[in-house]
Amino acid sequence: MSGTTAALSLFGVVLLAVAGLYGAAWAVRIRSEALDAAPFGSGLEPVEHAVSRFHVRWYTVTMIFLAFDMEMVFMYPWTRVISAMGPSAVIEMFVFLAVLVAGVVYAWREGALRWT
Image 1 (cartoon, rainbow, N blue to C red):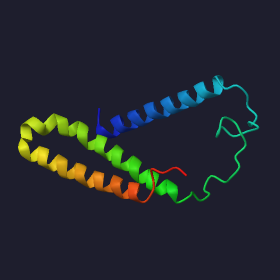
Image 2: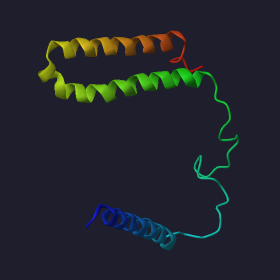
Image 3: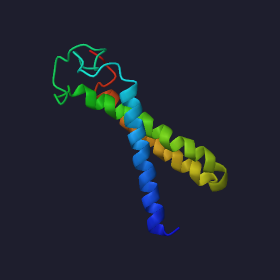
Image 4: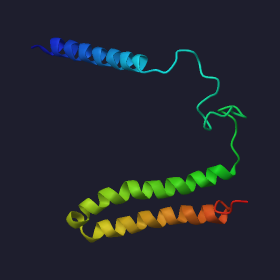
């Protein structure tokens, strides 16, 4: 089987899979008319537009979330390579954690942890 034939065969399989998923979704749908309320907020009508502005307090909350999220993203692989890299991996991780702690301390100082 040549490369072009294999690519076209794979494309055909993908098209059949997409058509099958659309057909399955159509078969198990509840009703065909539009819903009265949007799914946001447990079916309640939205009170503001989806791209409305957020209060500035949410940006510092986002910084805290990213700090802890990035910590976990890098800590899991680090545990796998620490024995192979030795003490330099420990030093690098503590430097990384120090940068994250500095971000959390900054957010704390700015009042991101005070919810009033």
